[in-house]
Each structure stands twice: as C-alpha cells, then as structure tokens.
Length: 498
Image: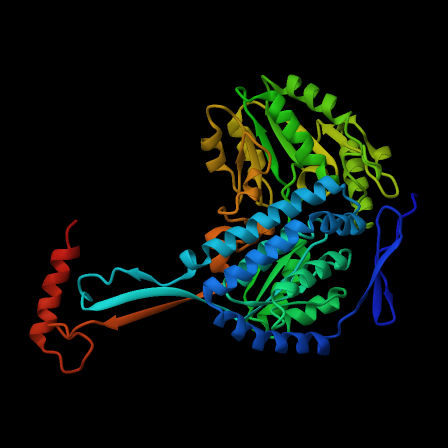
C-alpha cells in the first residue's frame, strides 16, 4: 500500500487546507454551522435588493472592475490555486484567464439577454402589447469544485451576479483559500453590501446552504452528490443546476489530422492530472488509422510527467481518495485483457499518477464505463464512425466530446449525446463565453455560460398591456353569440387549412 496524504480535517470549529504536494498547511478556515449559513443568506437577501437596484449598467461597471482586479493580480491568484491544488502555475493561469473572459462577457451581455423584449401578440390579441424580461431570482447558492476552483464556480457566480442576484459561495474544502481570495477581491469593488459572501466547511455546510431558503443552487461535483442535493432541495422546491462530471469520448476519423488528434488526446487526458470533468477518457479510432494514431499518442505520452518541479506538465492528485479509484480502474482493465502501452498500475503513486495509455480494454470495464478522473485514457479500434458514435453514446454520462474529422466533423458532432462537442480542437467550447456549458444524463442538467447561463439565474416575467379596446371582446361574459361565430370563422381561415 502507498501512503496517502490526509484530507482536510476539522480542528475544533475550523479546518486546515493542505497542499496536496507537501501536506503543508496553507490556511485555516471556519466550519460554518447551519445557523451561520442562515445568517449569511439573510444578509444576502438585503444585499440582493441593493445590487438589483444598481441596474444592468451599474452591475456591469462593478463586474468589469472586479475583472480588472483579478487580471492585475493574476500571479497572486495563480499561486493560491497552486498552493491548494498542486497544479502548475501555467494551468492555474489558463483557468483564471478563461474565468476572466466569462466575467467580461456576462457583464457586457446581461442587458441584451435579460432586458425587456417585445413579443408578437398575434392577430386575435392585436390590441395587446406583449413584452418579456428576465428578473433576478434573489439569492443564489454556489457549491464549487476543487479541480478548477476559479473557472468552474465563476461560471455560475459571474452569470448570477450579472443577472442581479446576490451569491453565497461554498468552495470545496480542498480549495477554500481560492474561494476566499475571489470573494475578498470582489468586496474591494463592491464594499457597500455583502453581495458575494463566502461560507466554508464540509458536506454539512453545503447541505445547510441547500436548505437555507436560497432561490437556486448551482452545484458542480459528482453525480452521487448531485442527486443528494436534488433530493434535499426538493423539500423546499429550490431549483438546481447540476454539473456532475462525465466520461467524455474523442472520435478519430480516417481523414483526421492525426498529429493534432494525438496531441489533443494527450492534453485532454493528462492535463490537470486528468482531473477534468470534460477531459478525454475514451478514444474511438477508425481501424484504417488506428495503429498510426496509437503510435503518435504513445510517443507523446512518454514525454509527459507528473511532479512538483517546474518541468512537470501536471501536478499531484488533489483529492487523496481518488488514487484508489484510478488504481482500481487500471487494474480492472488489465485483468480484463487490456494492455498498458504507457504506464500501468505502477504509475499510481502516493501523490502523483503518471500517464497511462490503455488499449484492448473491454467496453464493460470500469475504465470505460466509470469516470476515472485521473491521467488515464483508453483507445479502442472501430470499423467505422457509426460504431464510434454508438460506443461513445453508450454511457450514462453526456457532458463533453471531441471529433477529429476534416469532412464529417459537424455531422458526427450532431450525433453525439453530449451537451458540448469540440471539432478538430480539444475542449474549445469551454473557452467560448457565448456557448452554454452543461450535460445530459448523469452529467446533470441546466446550463452555465452564454445567454442560457444568464437566463439560468433569472426568472422570465411576461407582461401583456392593452393598447386599445378591441372590436371583439373575448374575455367577458357579456360577449355576444355573433362574436363567438365570427371568432370561429376567423380561426378557420387562419388555421383550418390542411
């Protein structure tokens, strides 16, 4: 057995955040109780009314200033991320830059997406002016993950704030320092009211947030935890948006740029230690290019290494319990007849997991069916792209996906049961702020990012206003039979044709 670094543990009413690379204590944070969470939410309600009162322009100005603080202090933020996750500074910078882009997009586009729009009132109601606008929900609770502690929660927080809501943010117990840094930076540009507040702790604190009477919960994490949150939220009819991981596939057609596809596979599978919900975990390759593709992947994977030094491409496994999951998936694959062309069981250490490339792995094995969330990838040969699509879709998950094909990329993308697909580039949809992000099946539901992400944190309000008295009064007991007869004739003319 290998030694496993400890997880964050309570020390009285506080807990310590530890570096996964060294076990060094990098911060101490309170374990918020249910009573404290309720108080935070109560303060958020008053702050939400004030924040809504600023209007789109006022909120956009504050969000742009927040974006500026994050940008100017990017090295500091990246160091906090590295301290708590162990990931390289360059990876911390990448996720932070993408998050900054999303803040900018949400601030700029909130009015256009959520502001009042006119709708057609139709011929029968031509005397009415119809409008719809999207109003803030009030207070949104965000429960964030540890693998991308900046990019992922800000995909909910920024859009909820732009829509006019106050936010209560519970970061993972593995990355409370990142959450505190973000909230403190926001408070510098919005000092008047506690519009964005932090709560820290473990599952009990998150459960308290779900049951606190917030107007919506945005959760990112495992499908199992997501189901528990949904069940708890049902008690108060609190709506939720769930992003719950995936088992994403990459397809390689005969006309693909094999060099680019191999590079995307290696980066998509191993970057961030494979701890990426939209990472590449399965690859299906046309038999005509399979051998060449595998050779390219193996050659590239051999040059990728985990470690804490500056030359390492990725860092340690952040959550210690995941080491046993990664190990068991590799063991199961090998016992079932799979082969490790790079790595293997010995790649799983006490902190770091070196890259593993598996082939000839049965489709019903754990390494193919379950989310590994580590630096491993399975590659399978298929007779054609129809088989590739069928196997890619044969999963309970449906988050992201990737296709490499010069001629059929768009067609194959449309056939994949996933919330997002990148064509001829790895995970590109995550960096495009105007595109919605989310999945189907056990990957969850609801969307963050883009117009859909803004509307996720708002409620539509429809208004019909009478402009003039109609010659035909339909909504009155005093209407005449002749009116009903005329309406019947009019409807027949308008809609009765076959």
